[in-house]
Length: 212
View 1 (cartoon, rainbow, N blue to C red):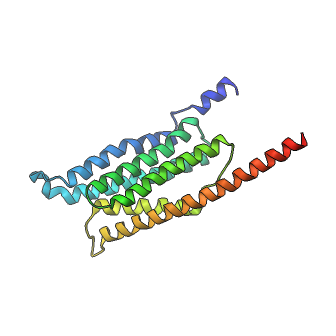
View 2 (spheres, one colour):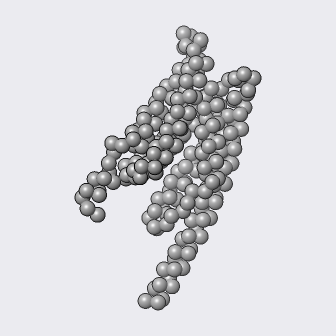
View 3 (cartoon, rainbow, N blue to C red):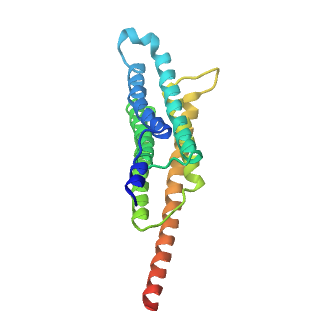
């Protein structure tokens, strides 16, 4: 690979990467708003609802940037090492930190957070293994639905109050439980596919060794 190609691959200053960095910068803002929105400080009591709604909307904004940075990168063919590394990390930082915060506020059961966080760690390890083995294991639709339900459930739990008669906390809880179930299902599905590809690769390698 030429030096110019290496520099292009490591290019940081482009729109998709800026959106990813922006998403990371929004994380402390969301966490601060959640903290203030549940604070026992007297002068903040009148602003709890406003702060909670702000946290939910900013989380939604951060989630939307995840779609747009990927879309723009594909549309403009802007694929960089920096972006490929940072984008999934930004997603995990956002969801994991918010889930832990919601659990500390008593809005999400600890076991659900543990399952979702461990699943992310497990899937990251599997993807690293697949990359190391030179395998491409496509993300299944179950994982995409898991992400969607999680991104809907989290802001609803941040708001944590009914709106126009709609029980947002209940809906948020249902979406998070659904995300938990889908996360386990998608992890099992991914694992089975990866094992099958590993077996096929090793079988092909043995056959090539015999022929040589």
